[in-house]
Image 1: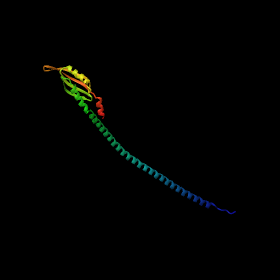
Image 2: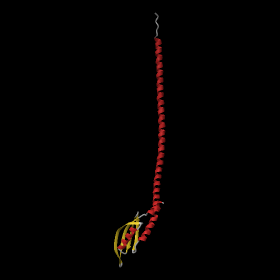
Image 3: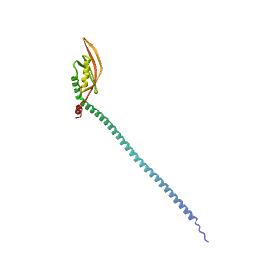
Image 4: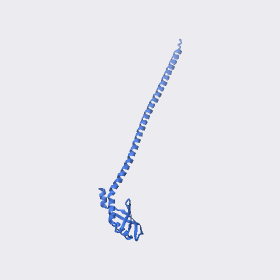
Length: 189
């Protein structure tokens, strides 16, 4: 029987397969490296885009912080102006009150009583003066109590002093300035 030697063909086939395997392996490595590089590039782009967004947000936040600071300053200025306006409004409302108070003090002052000073803090008024006697101070207290612009008289002190041949009473009286209903209605208009 004739003998056929197939070894060289198998050898060649094996070498071809090894060569194809090496080429495929090299191609796979190249494709894997290209894939890794492509993924790294894509992630680098995504990171760069996110960093750009973060920077933009940081810049916008800084601008908003400046705006907030400016708004806070304007709010404080507005509050100061409103407080000033309120004070001016209160002063405008209380302008006629002091006129009524002085007019009422002049009307209610009994004979023999002389005022040396008046001081007002809020609605409380301190009246200092000299009277011919302590009964004149009592008359002043009754007239203050009967007044529509003054009320709640309180005596702080009454001292009898000698002035030459005559005696006189130095006094300090506290009273409360009252507001009448018609005055409140005038202020509201």
